Amino acid sequence: SQQGEEDPQALSIQEGENATMNCSYKTSINNLQWYRQNSGRGLVHLILIRSNEREKHSGRLRVTLDTSKKSSSLLITASRAADTASYFCATDVSISGNTPLVFGKGTRLSVIA
Amino acid sequence: DTGVSQDPRHKITKRGQNVTFRCDPISEHNRLYWYRQTLGQGPEFLTYFQNEAQLEKSRLLSDRFSAERPKGSFSTLEIQRTEQGDSAMYLCASSNDRVSVNQPQHFGDGTRLSIL
Image (cartoon, rainbow over all chains, first blue to last red; front, side, top):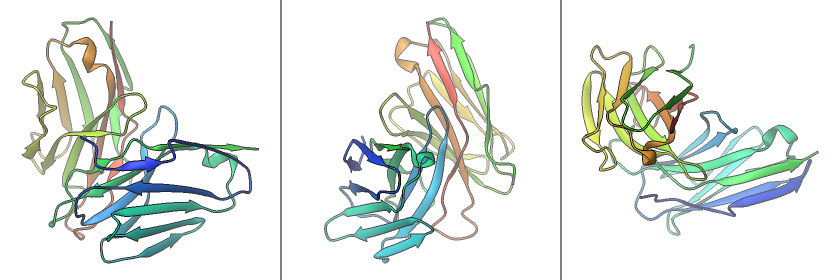
């Protein structure tokens, strides 16, 4: 079963706009991770946020985590056509960490040049 | 760091045949994971290893599926008597838990299995 639910399922924006994707999950977590997947390819790790962190930045990416609401958001600023991909949130629910991730269904982002 | 590699990239076979996939993780990574992904869905966990020990198997892993990591390096995933429902992308990932408890997983490009 999939723990995470991304919202929206699909998002289409113009190049230069910001894209926000949300993720909700059901159980307590050790960390939450965001991945990108281009069509027909594997997943690329974007950012990991631990359960005791609230916000994290990496380049044009900003991730927030609200453990009280069991939700996270991924913001991509100044989007580019190359950002077109599916984005997944994944949770590590174990205390010990480094265990299999539980993925959501993903958000398909289309950035139009 | 040459990344995680999977072979083959694509496999087309007839129903009832056996197939085997190979995954070569990043060399210093001791944890190796197998996931399955169907169209429009996120990856679902199948099984994972720490070194050569298989630590957990998902209920998705029926008795037709077997995975090995004999020397704690590469891993194979075999599906016997394939069925239509086995058609999916099979993804392998690796991580190094010796660094910390919060490590990202590094994925290969997957093996896409099509059952005729």
